Structure formats: structure tokens, C-alpha cells
Image 1 (tube, rainbow, N blue to C red):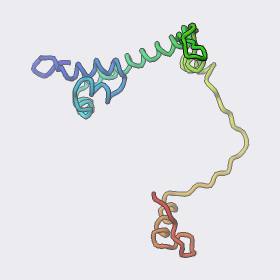
Image 2 (tube, rainbow, N blue to C red; image 1 turned 30 degrees about the vertical axis):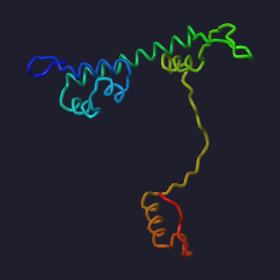
Image 3 (cartoon, rainbow, N blue to C red; image 1 turned 180 degrees about the vertical axis):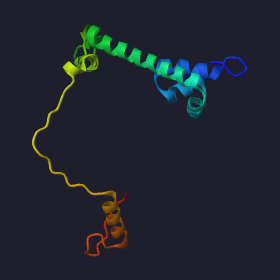
Image 4 (spheres, helix red, strand yellow; image 1 turned 90 degrees about the horizontal axis):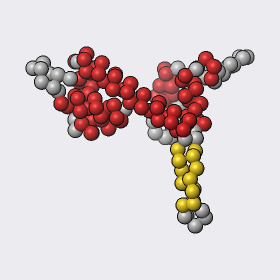
Length: 154
């Protein structure tokens, strides 16, 4: 990222590097020692920055996907303890849940859960106008026609 004078914009560069690692705007801003609102200001006025930010987010997501795959397929080594709390060995634990998410993402047409509903569903809903009327009546002490006020907070 360069400024209009050709010099590198150190804060933008530091922030984008932190986004690649964290994938989180607040944490990246803290690491780069900037206010998080700077990022939003840069997004509005700098197309080059916006493209670089999207790339940084993609890199962070790629890292997460790689980590999910590692935990699902390669597993994570865990220490086994006896009843006295002494370490007695290790085992590899795999994540079936992460594997399911990876399969859903890689082949959604095959693995994504599809819910098919048949029959009819009756649904009565209240419009915003109806809800406001109830609240107004409640504040006047006549919400239910009996003069009793509704208690509670909104």
C-alpha cells in the first residue's frame, strides 16, 4: 500500500498483515496499533486497499480451512492421564464435526443436509403496527382492556 506521495502506508500494511493472521478486524487493529474505524474509512476511499483487504480475509479463511482439515483428517494429539493426574500416554483425536463441515463445503450437492417439508403450516403473525398498538395501550394502562398495565421492560 502506497500513499499518494509514493511512500508506503505503514499502518495499512501492518493492519492487513494482522488481518491475514487473525481474520478479525478488532484484533488486527489492536495489533497494528490503529483505531478500527480507520479500516472502515480506508474501505470507503481506497479501492486498492479494499482489494488488498479482501485478499487478506481470503488468506485468513484459507488458513482456517487448512487447520480444520488438519484436525479432521490428521487429528490432534491429546495427553491421556490416569486417575492420579499423571500423564500415561497420548492418543490422536479426530474431529468428525469438522469433517462434516469440510464435506458440506466441498460437495454441497452430495453432503449438505436438505430439509423437505410437506403439508401445510398455519402461522399467525403480528404486524409491527399491531405490536406498537399493544405497547401504546400498555403504557396508557389499558393494554388488555381491564385497565391492568403490562409489566416488564422492552
